[in-house]
Image 1 (cartoon, helix red, strand yellow):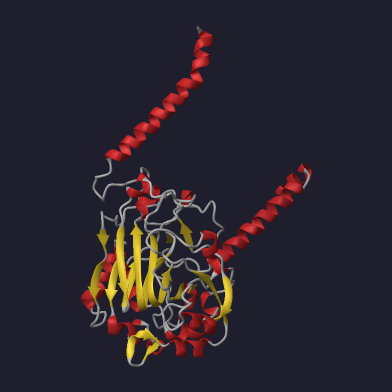
Image 2 (spheres, rainbow, N blue to C red; image 1 turned 60 degrees about the vertical axis):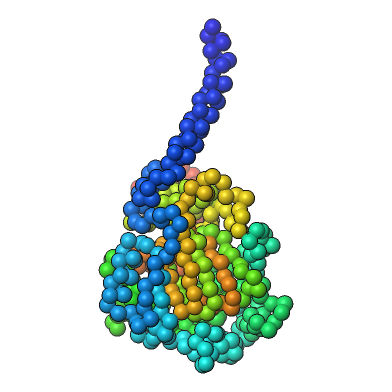
Length: 407
């Protein structure tokens, strides 16, 4: 009898595990219609804004400038980490907002970029770019490996590819000017922004909103933020058909300003990370939105700005299983002359349409900007030195280790 029990024990264990899995699936299915304020992942203590079903971004009318009432409402959105769009229009070129890029646009049409001016200003400097896959509503035409491959080309050649009169252009995309393109140094040291960095500052209204939630960067004597305390990226492309990025999150608050073209952000709040087939990236989020130890990048090198969900998202995604479908989806359509505030850790994929030029501002979301935006290089050096020291210690004989520890 005892032998029979031992023989059946593995089978009973397997059946028990299957039963537990079925119960978990049933429980998740029962939770599908629950309130958006209910935590979707047990142990996830993200206490900020959770997207409701079919969320659409609120638009704040800032066409008359960032008046007191607009600033107050914007700050409330930043405080509760809720995405919001600012309709800036002419305020997009207001120097009091930190924007001096009117010369980037044509004199007779502030919504059309002056490519000749940009080419003349940046010159023939080589820039790092990638190929952006056309998006026809069903499938990708390029694999992720090809999309993530960066290469150098002169800025002048890139601008000619953007020209609408170029019938065979439109596949190139400029968007990564930092460490993901294996560049060292600060963002403003690489073309094209090395030639354009004086045309904008970190927007004061964004800084004020961050200061009020105690997440502002240390400021200079004139109240501005130094370039070391934030990061910017210039995004340029002219896809002949809309192109789409992968689903990812950034570890910084993001103000995304569209000067021309159109960007659609399909978003998910951090509490839905469990449903996004994350690639060993997101485990849980603390109530203040900072990463915990389980929020590590197990499969990503330290220093990547963006972390990607394990989804090959297209118009109809074969990987969009019942788990993904249980995540709440939001949409933020950002047109020319508008700016989107996207909180840190919000998942998003971006569809680009038309001749698009955009600049985003990444603000360190940790209190008082405890390190510069390229702090990861310092962290890498510390980890490297510590690893080297440990390896050297392991090579030492035990007797020498004891002696050195006493000293």
